[in-house]
Amino acid sequence: MQASEDELQRMMVGGLDGDAAAHRALLRALVPLLRRFFARRLRDADGEVDDLVQETLMAIHTRRGTYDRTRPFAPWAFAVARHKMIDHFRRHRQHLSIDGLDDILVTEGFEAASGAAMDVDHLLATIPDKQAQAIRDTRVEGLSIVEAAERRGMSESDVKVSVHRGLRALAARLRGDL
Amino acid sequence: MLIETLAHDVRPVPRRAVERRMAGALATGGLVAVAIIPMTIGLRDDLAAALAGGTFWMKLIYTLALALGGTAAAIGLARPDAPRPRGLWLLSVPVLLMAGLSAHELLATPATEWMALVKGESWDRCALNILLLALPIFVAGLWAFRRFAPTRLRLTGAMAGLAAGGLSATLYGLHCPEASATFVLLWYSLGIAVATLGGWLTGPRLLRW
Image (cartoon, rainbow over all chains, first blue to last red; front, side):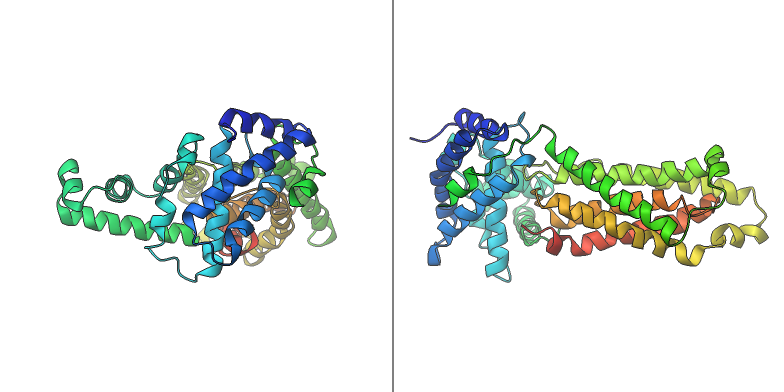
């Protein structure tokens, strides 16, 4: 049974109000969601998925004061998870390569279902619109360069350059240079 | 098991917990800085008279505006799902206004007197004192961030540094008798800017979680 956004949020607010049972239920419900979030994006060498699930649960617990009750819960929780994953990349790979970004850009399945299809949008919102659009067309929707160029009325080289610059900006952003 | 351990420590979290915690930290750090001033550099002798004049408040409004801007930005950045920060350009407004005051002041003064406006009596220590006084405030801010979840660590560090520097400069006004807008524009701003830069440089390491 997968908890819905409403249930998760209710448990979270209960925990914020001091209800230990609600908080425990929330953390339990998050375990499978987080495990799938990380398993989708990591190769899971040396049990890193379980480590990240634990670290994320701890962060969600100690930093729960940053959750705003008037906002949806899942995007907040997955933002914590994403940060933990990026931090993991920083620690274990000196250079986060542009190729590795495609893993992070993947979004589908349960996150969309639980109202947290924020991953890509959130990341792409940090770079200029034109680059974000080119990345969305080619990497998320899977259009070819030619198709993306036609759709946007841009030249093919313009699309390519935008994708490349956008990915480079994202990589810099994820490395924490920004 | 981890979840059981965590579920044993479920203290209620008030609404607006981020704002409260940040305000508490800045107040604590600010009190430490206020306590340091009379013990080291001293309060300005004419403090009571200065409170009745305009320049004291001109300085206070300038530095406090920067402090509040930095604080508001840092609070926004404390949430992991924070949208891309907008409106950071507003931070330039107080600086531009102060530059206007300075220009007005310089135009009303013969060029031979300009160096007096620039240097005052204490140009060589103003920025450093502001930076030193900002340290306890910055440390208090770091303490607050132990419960926050920023994802843009450099920018967050810079805004925390700006908040600390701005508040420090505000409190430094209790000591510093300088009254020229040009002096404030140059040296107060320098101290605040270096505090901001310090936060920008150290943010990724100090705010990591």
